[in-house]
Length: 328
Image 1 (cartoon, rainbow, N blue to C red):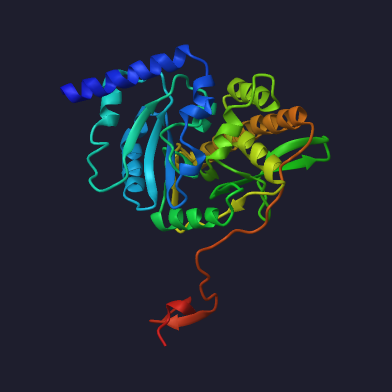
Image 2: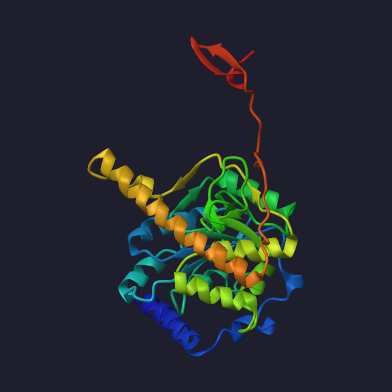
């Protein structure tokens, strides 16, 4: 191992150890964070949640892509797997700073594997907006830029690409987690843009606060941090999130990417996992509703697109194509 890599890892292990023996109070101390007046509005900080060692190659590629964008101030990789061996961490850090001319890329080791950690306020964040995303999501740069522009006009709201919904199932008189084709009330942390202030609101409420109680439930379930953030933002704004269309988007972690022996087995296994996933997420919605004492989630309808193409069909080269592809 090169000497520089050893020093780099030692620094992060010391930082990780110190974070683990102190409470979150220093993180939530406003004096340790940048002055809100100094935060930039023309750029965004990208927070990539990393955990799986099998996706390191993909993670580095995604981080490099975001780093190359002029509207990105920095890329922070939040590594949340405490069991990752040092040699693997070295592999992650190799060449992170070798993309000349791009935004800096940093690896921040989390003191725990709590999903709440992805919403911690951080002194490294120097922008008014943050993009929260997973290490297995690839979105084309034009769509990312468009989403950031939409956020600039909707700064109080969540902006993202992956919609879900809550609903009241009258047959069982209970809140459930579901998907509707015409409305949504939840955006996933697969990729969402929020204002930096919400990190502090989510993470720095007192131990006896409603949000603190719900953060504990997130840790218990090891799920639903994104639903809780949607609760927090909707409660603040009394409005729903904003869905944006992506031109090219790939979710490498989607179970439908998996290949199984036989279509019947594949569909059965996927269906079973979906039911269990939705059940657990429904439990979260019911618990958050109980703690909040109300349902703050609000529905939104439709999505914003970067362009509207011609929907009429014309003949081109003997084939039917959308008319805006025809040359007149």
